[in-house]
Image (cartoon, rainbow, N blue to C red; front, top):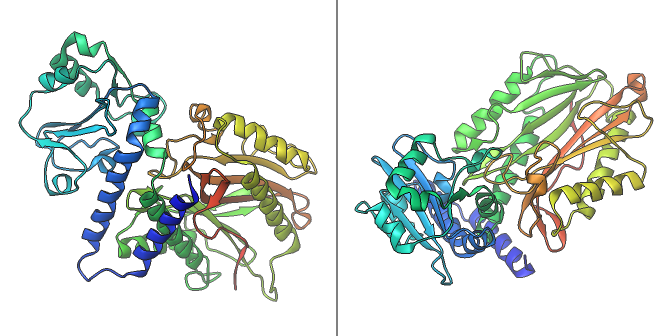
Length: 438
């Protein structure tokens, strides 16, 4: 990704944020932004994704009442029975885009498709183009690339016949590449979503929302949900996880537990805006009577987490697979004295700060479908990291706390970033401190 490309993304973001919409026009402005993202993706990302994966035709099937996970990415639209988004590489500079049996204002006016019609013969359409490899949305491991139903597959086989059915292949990697490689308009939208996430989370972890001894964890979650409702936003994972960590680990999550002085609070959540979904965390400490600062043991644990994050930031570059990058990051952490954990949330008793990282893909889902430097995404560990891939830079650092009798404080840090040729670049201001609640 060039410096000029990133600058365009930043300028676009500033223009959209600084210019308030005309009253009653926010829905239209959001649609216009989605339409621009779609056109940019079709122009710049789709050709390379199809050609790198050696797919001549990509077919996505939708039905009335059933939307493929890529429905927004591909243009939305109304389907009365069965419809097809079909992309064909005909050897030109751009990929031919057809919407067969899909219509309506949102699709027809977005300008992304060459062909939009309800009158078609699918077999004739495919035979005219005679693709050798036909990608279908089928995947054992990636939900976002597994939209083809069993009956839709049967319909394709019946309609196209054995000649073309024998050419069906999984579009799993194509879908991953198409979604996870970003254009400037997407980066601008995601940065805005990230700033919204940060603002709401940091307000939630303040005395605006929390009164020690009165406010319950679930009260904070519902306050956040109300802010999303007010602003017409979605979220990444349902009810925000508001939890308390103590010497014995996580004590309670988003329930009726009343927040007390001395509690160490965490939030793990994400905002959905313009088909972009964030994933981020914040940490807060509820001051005891007479305290003005976070206790030294907790602050030291947080500081160790910040050290880990900086090493991750400096190490990740485009080029290797995510699995290879995991090995590089872990080696860099071990070199400066951290201990790498073999299992999540299971510490060894070592005096060292113990670390496990889960820097997963992020974007159109809170857990995206691109390359992931994360043990819980084994297939995506095999994918190569490319410039413009977005990651949630997530880590868990466990440091002994004398105030807890030597028990380790679990510090989770997570903020969203983009990988460029230069490495990791943050998409909004990241977590730099434990928030204090008085």
